[in-house]
Length: 194
Image (cartoon, rainbow, N blue to C red; front, side):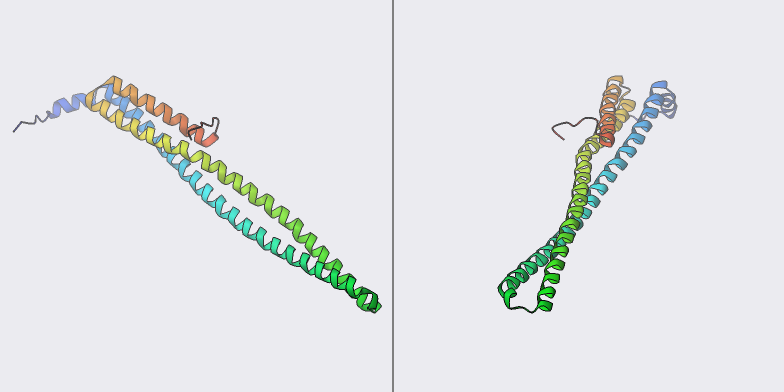
């Protein structure tokens, strides 16, 4: 069985006081802050996406209810008009006026529901655009989180191995992660793979 050498306490204290180790530890803490901000942004984008989807679905349900009411008044008006034209010559004047008032009222209601439906559709489409915007932000946050986690791991390894190239790799991963996180918040660039 091979023997494992346990480092002496004085040696560990010496390693801890090295400037490289302190610098990397400080930078790693900055990575963790960026990761927390990125995680929060991704979580908020997902929540906003789901909320907008739910609200859009509610609006489309409301739209359908208005469309049904519009069609109900439209069919009632059409039936009344047909009945009116068939029976019009033999109607008494007060019944004729009653039919005309009902036909007019059904037409007004049909128009009212058609106009209300347009406003509801506009709101539903606005909510769908909000949902789509947040859905397009989410992958940037996901990839940024992964890269920042990798950067933290690489920085930790660079401390243990006392390796500047590994630390530089962690800086590159963190830089790309921070860029993707920034892009997730502001969508300055849209990459085709995301």
